[in-house]
Length: 235
Image (cartoon, rainbow, N blue to C red):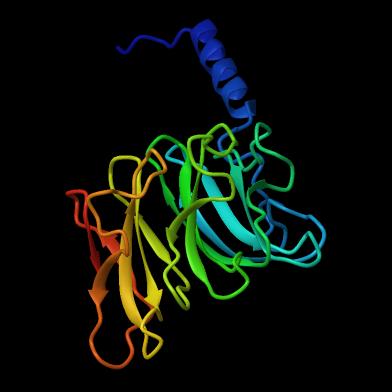
């Protein structure tokens, strides 16, 4: 004949289950459940445009965009949203400024640095004559890496235009950047450059960047992926 259950034990188990069920889940508690209501990362004046996003490695993300809050020129900002859905209180309200150089900075792209921060690259018109490529390192703490130049490291300042870069991690805290390049002043080609975790351009790579493709006529809109050995494959 089976043993009768202990009523006190059953009551204790029921109490534990009720308490466990009453404890709110915190992982996604701050994320809105209405698809028409989202987490505001930046509500500054002016326009915030063309965001790009990367994982922070801990369930959250770092987002970058170009920003017209200054009213005249477009600048580059970033913000950190936690896995909980809350904006990281350690980061500045409405985003951390990565570049406020003169004239416009547009179309930032972002890659994780492997330690909770990110490297951001963008096209930059600060010289007032043509577009160049710059990059900046943002730390997980919500500050710009002081080892990198203010307003970003120059990745390419060749003659004529370099536009719309894209980026991949080098697996060692730096990044490889590629872009369409009009330095020939005849047609668009594809070039790439390696930026080290220190904020320096890799001295082993050519100072005028690596020509990935300089075939006749146009090459544009490159995409990039890590090769798993510190390099990259570009298409």
